[in-house]
Image (cartoon, rainbow, N blue to C red; front, top):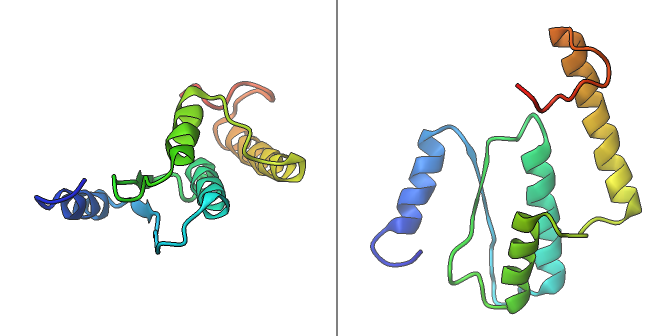
Length: 117
C-alpha cells in the first residue's frame, strides 16, 4: 500500500466491519526477533475465539527483509515451525478448552471436529 489513501481505507474498513487491526510498527530497528514475536502474537490472536475478527495489515514499507516474505509464505502454505514446545502445549490446551465448551454448547459428540460448521 502507499499513496492514494489505500492504507487509510484499509484501516477504516477494518473499523467499520468491527474487526481489530494488527499492524507492524517498524521503527527502523525492526529485525528478525521482533518479526517472530509479532507473527506469533497475530497468529495466536487470530486463533483465539475472543479476538478472531483480526485483520493483519502489512504494507510494502514494512517488508524490508527477505525473512518477512519467507515467513509469510510459510504460514500461508502451512509449513512453519514458529512455536517452541511449551508455546504449542499452551495453544493446544486453550484450543481443547474451546472445543469442550463448543461441544457442551451445541451438543456435539466428544471428539467431533469443531471446525465443521
